[in-house]
Image 1 (tube, one colour):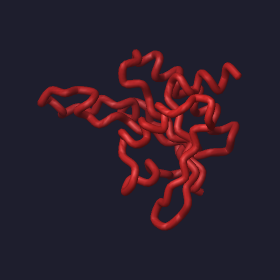
Image 2 (spheres, rainbow, N blue to C red):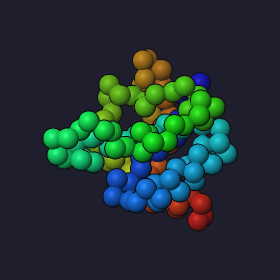
Image 3 (cartoon, helix red, strand yellow):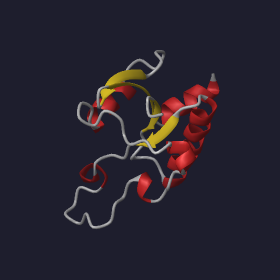
Image 4 (tube, rainbow, N blue to C red):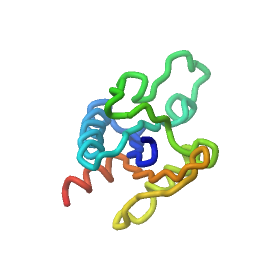
Amino acid sequence: VCDDILLFVPDIHGSLGSQLNDYILAATLATFRNKAMVILDAPQELICPTEDKVYPLGLSSIVKSPTWLTRGCAVPCQATHGYSDWGGVLQSDLNVDPVTVCENDGRRVNVFVVGGDEIHGVFEK
């Protein structure tokens, strides 16, 4: 069930409205492509570099994705891929399908990584 995932990386510099719009587009794409969708928030220190980290600020703190969308999956390949690794996939050539294959607990996982720019690019094609 968690071997084909759309990993949505919200733009931390975008407005909340922009992030929510991108989330809806990503959810539509995940549903259309029959993929589980998981949000990868930026680390708290990138969002709020001050000492006050009592309140989480990532998109997933205000958007509760339904189980039918996430399929109960977590962020894939956490042992080998961190936030900057997934960000590197987003920075790669936009003409290439941003799919990364990684191992998650010994299972092969196809991860389709999208952010705001990529999700709009998919719908503009």
